[in-house]
Length: 131
Length: 123
Image 1: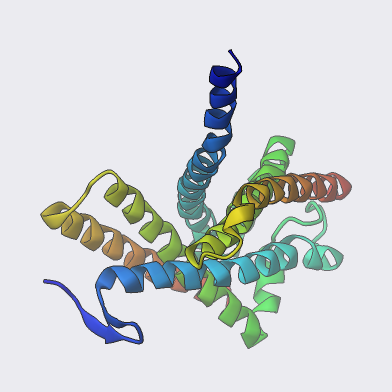
Image 2: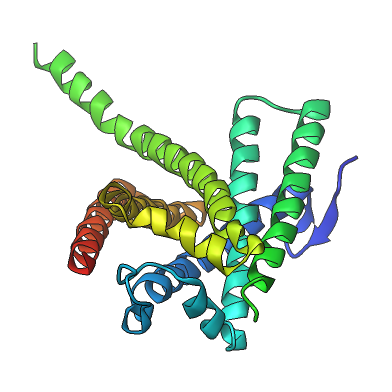
C-alpha cells in the first residue's frame, strides 16, 4: 500500500508526513522540555515538603500544580510528542539499516502499539495525580 | 609531500558531519530509553502518593543528581543540534553547518555546567 495523498507540494507519501511530524514534534519538544524541567525542579522548591531535597518532585506539588489546566496541556503534549519523536526515531534508525517491506510494517506496527500503550499508561499516571 | 598531509586533514574535517550524525543518533536512542525509564518511574504514581514519593526519594542520592545534570546536557545537545538539522533540511546556513554543530556542542556543555551548578545549589 502506498499511502499517497495530495499535499501542498503535489503527491506526497506517508514518509513525508512521518518526516514532517518528526520536525513538528522536535520544535514542540524544544519549547516544552525546558518548561517541564524548570517547573518540576526549580519552581517548586519554595513549596518543598519537610525532609525532601529541594528540587525533588513530590506528589503533593504535582497534584497542586494539576489544579491548573495549562499544566495538563503541557504534560499531555509532552507525552505524545516525546513518544512519537522517540519511537519514530527508532524506526528511522531501523530504516537506515535497510529495513523495508514486510519487516518495516511489522516494526512500524510494533512501535505504534508500544506508543499507544505507553500513551494510555501515561494518561492514567497523570490522572493519578488528581485528588 | 604536503598533499597527502593536507588530504588527511581534509578527510578529518569532513568527519565533523559524521560525528554530529553519530552523536545525534546515540543521544536520541539514549533519550528514548530514558523516556521509557522515566514513564516507569513516574508511573509508580498509579500505586498512590506513598509509592510515588518513596520511588522518587531514591533519586536524591548524589550520583543520580550528577546524572540529572548530564541528562539535561544531553537533552540540550540533541535539541540544539536537531534545530541545526531542521535548518539543513531547508538548506539554510549549509555553509555554517560545522560551526553550528560546534555551537550546539558548546551551548550544551554550558547548559550541563549550569545544571550542575543548579543541582549543587540544591544540595
